[in-house]
Length: 293
Image 1 (cartoon, rainbow, N blue to C red):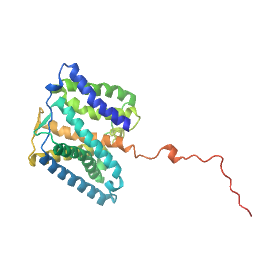
Image 2 (spheres, one colour):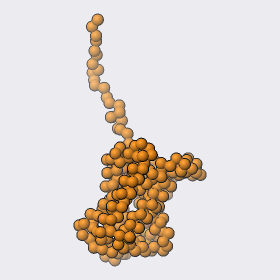
Image 3 (cartoon, rainbow, N blue to C red):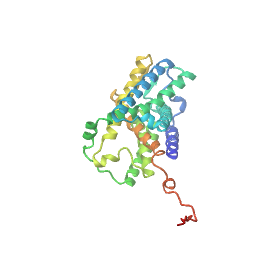
Image 4 (cartoon, one colour):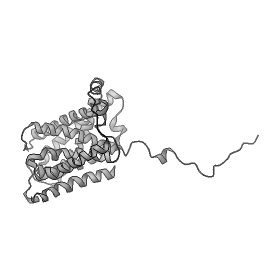
């Protein structure tokens, strides 16, 4: 898990900058997202926190199990990774220049922005769990059209150059390929999962089960729009530099599966026990106990 996350972070940091250098561009020429004022961020933080707790409460009432109580350490790890992911996306926006915010960095604003980022993935996962608690929806999505996927080796041969092109070329020419740059984080995580011989969030497509991905995309739409609407309503300024407003909604929908795949990578740290812990070796020599008649 840690190795994959380290590769994920390193690739997102290094390859876009390398693409910029190869295109002849300079870091100083980039604009991208800037800081946001603290007050709208704090209000957004409060709304996201209340919304996430409400989703968790409803899921607990429906299922009889409290996810936050049963998986506390997992959600803390997801929140920490989500905070890191948020700043990585801000870094990528220096190249893509898809959105702009107005404000100046100060300790309070930076801390509030980090906490907002840290809540996004838990909010998405909680919303997905809430949507997934609907048996009718899951039953309907589990009977979708099966998609025959090629072998993992073939998928890697396709994903590797596409992901590399997204990080390099997408950062070098964002006016035409910004969409490929924003797809790269999810493609990179899927590629790393395949390299480690792990299942991905798209593995269910082969048997016609689209539930996880569709619910995650819907969760991304809900959380993304909620966060942006609250931030704007609280007085924050968010300027989108996109060819069409629909691209923003596609971005929110893409963010949901990204959070889900990231959550699956983190969950491996809690998935079962090691073989040595399950099958403990017996001491040698084996003691023999005899009973006297």
